[in-house]
Length: 173
Image 1 (cartoon, rainbow, N blue to C red):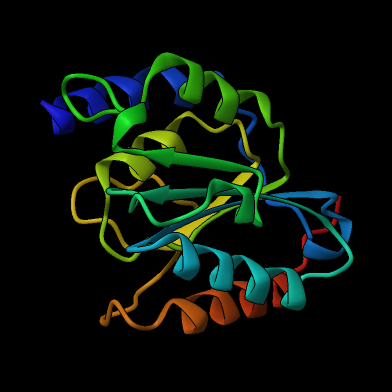
Image 2: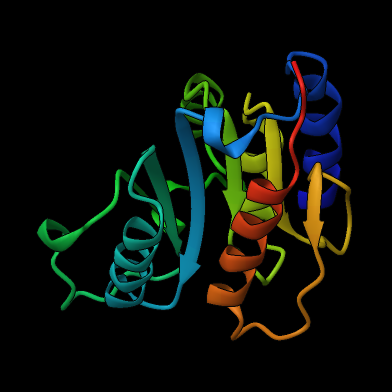
């Protein structure tokens, strides 16, 4: 069901999006998706991202399948957290989260998920970002800039490569 839902979402939201390349220097707002096994891992990734990108407005959405009862939600160091509780019957994001992603109006979306999570793929597809960057997806081409990463442990390398290419490619408006 998730692949079918992703296909439907792609058809609907791709038509609503103003797809265009944005020079990294001109970008004002960057939406970043991260996934992890623990809240501590998401906070660490969020901290590393905010250290690397200091001159832009950064909005980070974290996805974690199972939140441990020991983890304190007051320690979140990013803007939005989605857990398995926030998914519908088919394990897809609920409409409120899809609408949140679409309403962000970011210049750039960076999806740092290396597992091709359907949840983050659907949220990526529904984003209104002008350019979407991420790792090659198994099922759909939802990105405008694709970096081929082979290991799930290369999240930092993926971010560095995306930032390198976004800074290198220059578009004259």
